[in-house]
Amino acid sequence: MGKWEYSKGLHELSNGVYAYLWPHGQWGYNNAGLVTEGDRSMLVDTLFDIDSTREMLDLMKRTSPVAAGTIDTLVVTHANGDHFYGSELVRGAEVVCTAACAGEMQETPPQVMAELMKAAPGMGDLGAFFLQCFKDFNFEGLNPLPATRTFEGTLDLTVGRKAVRLIEVGPAHTKGDMIVYLPEDQVVFAGDILFIGGTPIMWAGPVANWLRACDLMLDLDVKAVVPGHGPITDKEGIRSIKGYWEFIEAEARKRFEAGMPENEALADIDLGPYARWGESERIAVNLNRLYAEFRGDDSPANVIELFTSMAALGLKK
Image (cartoon, rainbow, N blue to C red; front, side, top):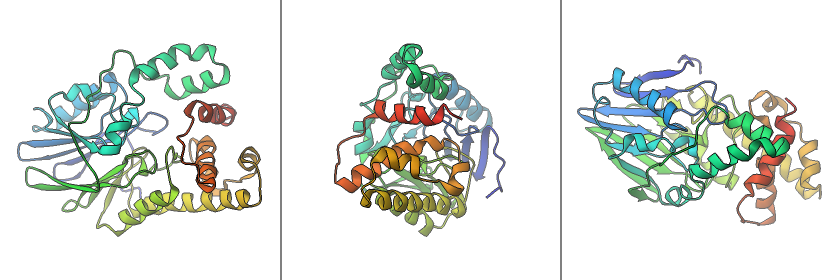
């Protein structure tokens, strides 16, 4: 790691392949990608709102003659709003995601976020934490594009003559995660399967799928790996996330099998080297999902309850 500067803006990874980075990768500050060849273009994810997405697209247009025209394809790696809420600015593009992602995109429209932001000042610690995470974004009046093409498993596309393989790896972080692999360029856009320097968060699971996704990426011929959040990395970064999940799963299972209640386990687990990672409060979500998995409970997460748990940890920092 460390080959690429972690600065806001476009970073060329290969001929016509760029990462858009947005330090420091905390809540809502995600990365995106641009792939161009000939007169064709593909955008990998948008940003969280119109202003940030417009800033990114304007930079892409100034940098690449191809991107100055119409974006032909938008690939949405998963259904968290920071990766697709700004998509109305590429209206006319084919919008591609997994079938599971397409369904999940409808579950938390930006109007829900806008209402929560309005209500947050009266919501005590939960509202304070919500504002701490998302105060920099404007969710009013957003109209993200729906998917126009979905797939399961894998989907092979081309951008001009450049090969692009979309690989479904969810459910893991969300219900419908994918990674985007450019074999000739040795580049992977990992979406939120990778958080580099920040703590990953498992809204869906199972954890075994996340570990398999890491192994899959480790088996690919890649030199540059673009995480959903954080600096560009390589296979060392993939191994670090795999190590986190192996550690957390083992610590959670040990306490679950000893009969320790979830809230006691949350207070008892020492994150060790992972305590230095940003957003360490996400352990509350990860432990909740692991305990549910150990019980065989596949009901969806209660997002408000989990944000309340994270607020109790995150506001102490």
